[in-house]
Image (cartoon, rainbow, N blue to C red; front, side, top):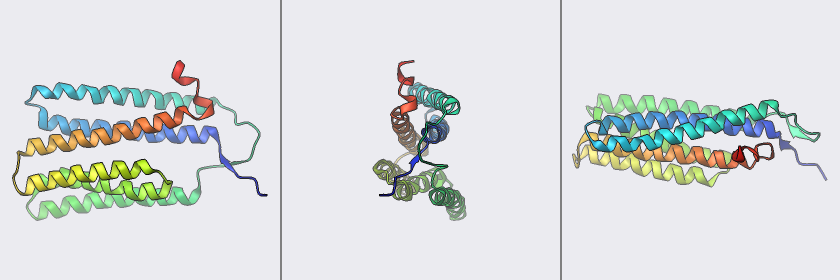
Length: 204
């Protein structure tokens, strides 16, 4: 029987770290967007919670990177890197997301709906989680994608029909998307802590 190859623990941990840093960055961006809608309200101070989450996620990400670099993989059969095919597909997904955002922004601006720029960005981001879920076989991507897409569609509907102010739309999208990215970041943190070489980090 052919022995199953595994990903190196160091590669697995550094992979989680990279994803966590991305989620910390995007959570920061969406928090700033939410602040744009709340800057005249005292509720803006509640956004500090997201900044705390960003610090936690980022600090663990750097600890994961440090641990993965000093770890010497034990004897065993490992794949040298993350699957090349998945890597390439992920790259194309990121390119597609960027193009989708660029095209979406240009469409709504040319149609005379500049208020739809942020909702459309959120919609493209939300939709891109679905192929990610298929690619990496993760259910959480579908949940995050569904949540983000619903938030974005609500923002689009509210804006088109003038059901509420633009600042409120910006707020709900910023807060909703920051929730999505921070939850995603923490899910990777939890999975990272389950990697054998990182199991002692939670107690440090």
